[in-house]
Length: 260
Image 1: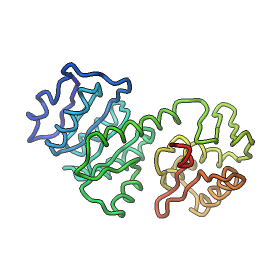
Image 2: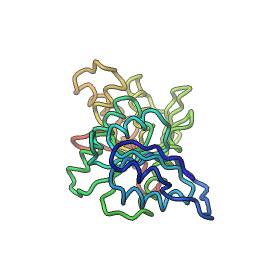
Image 3: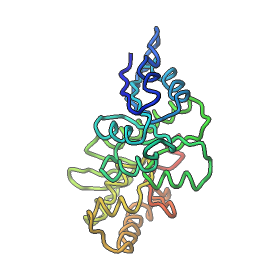
Image 4: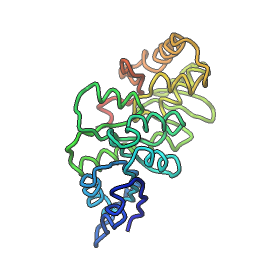
């Protein structure tokens, strides 16, 4: 029986009962600890009914402040955030997590709105993926596992890797296709942040804060270093890894064909 944390008022009794029991289920090899921040009881129940018997551990919050409290006081493999929540919306929660340095935990946003601007707002807040309601629970699980797998593949080693690009955090040596890359300290820091977060878009504000702290220089300085970094890691090679997400930030990702 999964452990469920309860926050919020009005539907506590619903969540206080067992949401789903593992009844002779075949436990999958990959098991995740997931925080679900969702105030719709039907959606929360459907998610639990499907995921808990598969061996995943679910914690629930039904308000924005409750979700933020759980996210900052516990360790999760991935977080599912509804956009519209009482007390504090999902975008504000995600933004707060990123500002507090919780950038390594993947976040998937749930929303009833399928407009491009809404998705861009989510990515700008630091979300890693977006799923529009109504959705398939199987698709939700697949997306969550993909986020966790990418995060584990790129964030748990002394050597970061995205495609053929490698960065040794011990020696600070970066290379691609066996070719050594010449980077200055700022460019190495930018590369590290982008590689650690290759599963999502990293905003300009995040990059500036990671490199220069709370007193960032003019934004043109960041663009200059990004330009130099792109010349070093992409210009000599056919496949381009560093993407600009206009109006939001940057993403370092392996070519599409190498992910298939």
